[in-house]
Amino acid sequence: MSVQTEGMRLGDWLKWEVDNQYSRDVVTILAGSGSERALTTGMVLGRVTKGAAVGAAVAGNSGDGTITAAPAVGQAAKPGVYRVVCIEPATNGGKFAVEDPDGVLVGIAAVGTEFATQLTFTIADGDADFAAGDAFTITVAAGSGKVVQIDFSATDGSNVACGLLTEPTTASDGADRSAVAVVRNAIVSANGITWPAGATTNQKSAAIAQLKSLGILVREGA
Image: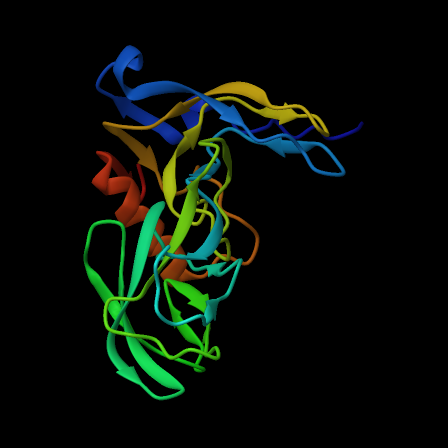
């Protein structure tokens, strides 16, 4: 006689929620790319909150140097506009203060040297030297807000836990799909939730802390 294995059910991992009209939200699962995207109940989700970055010189600069046109976006980068302002001019060089969209100093970038905090870019020297106050902007686009299985290596925001999927759902190749996720105020069983293959203990611990900040408590033995 063949053996059948029963799949995971909602009650196997969701142990309590304040109210399903409050604890759950409708989410959009990002379309599959080249194949369908199949997600299971209890899967930890991440949300795409950031897109690509574009670097550009501010009009009126004295120096004619350039900045990387498409800086790489790191995991800690924020959507919005970064300002990169010359604070220490120098012949064929200079230093620039890098501020995030909230005006917080991220670091100091030197002309000709790769900067790699939150964003990765290089300011190149030109024929005319930079003057104090010369500036560049780096605009990090907002993400789609769609969800995928949490991806600890991603830099688009989907590396941060945002909830857990209630029912198995498949987004076909090229087509998004609506679903429901537990996104706040709940207790879930550590034994019932689903992580990406190869997730480390440290990665899981970080995601569990992120879920806790949403009011979702992960309990051992629940």
